[in-house]
Length: 342
Ligand SMILES: [Mn+2]
Image (cartoon, rainbow, N blue to C red; front, top):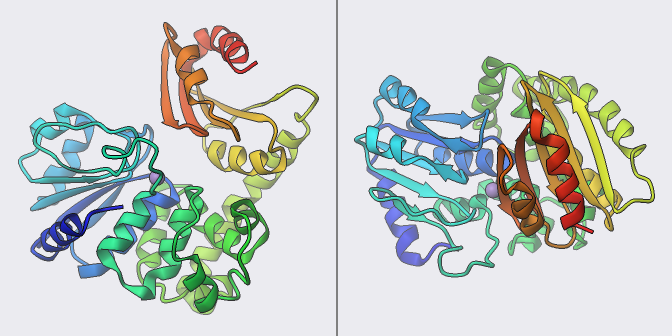
């Protein structure tokens, strides 16, 4: 969690910013962090960081385009020094991946003090915004990042139609209406950029989760339609992946799709269906294998070892991580990964 001093500092910096630019990760935790902070003053712009989980110098263009007075980076595992050096604005980076301290950046990461802390960025953004009207958004961001928020009792009390009682994280995410809301947030981020941006804009104006789930307004209907369009592509892939669950400890599923990335949604859902297996979902795109890995026991170390000397990179959290491996090194990587996870 953020310290009280950090909360005060971030509130002050947001309050005095006339045109903040937010860069955020391409997942519900990133999205919810942005919505919570943006709604405090409704100033500035948000940019989703797609393609790779890092903010590199190619994003300097965005800064030049929007002329922000401050930059806020949310839930991004990597920021490149070149980006920091090229922009003149003060940078505030809130994250919960492996700490990476860069000179010239105001950095907020609970893992610096406690390497085992697991506090999604949304949880910290909610500390800063502390607007109870957005309790449901805070819950979506935390749960989507596989974290049971400390305010779950409030969620049950305020939104019994999302979650009726206390239960396991996996049950909340996959058996309750709350889970559907998480899926909607996740699918809002998929599809053509212009449509995604429109959805995000709409989402900042939605007043309650009920509005979306019951499609009460034309804006909510737009979001729901987008979700359904994406879901049509997801469901058959999940069914196909389930067929790959055999006797082996590893559930490996590949698919090729230029347009739709469902690797993390598939790996999350499969890991709860098959809790004793290591799940490896790989999507082939542009000569690379983009992977999402899940396991109930720690798997990050095995991934790091398997990647040594391989043309690729990866990282993340102990039980949920990702990697990108060049196709020509894939077989070698897979062989090593199997050995490391035996
Ligand atoms: Mn996150």
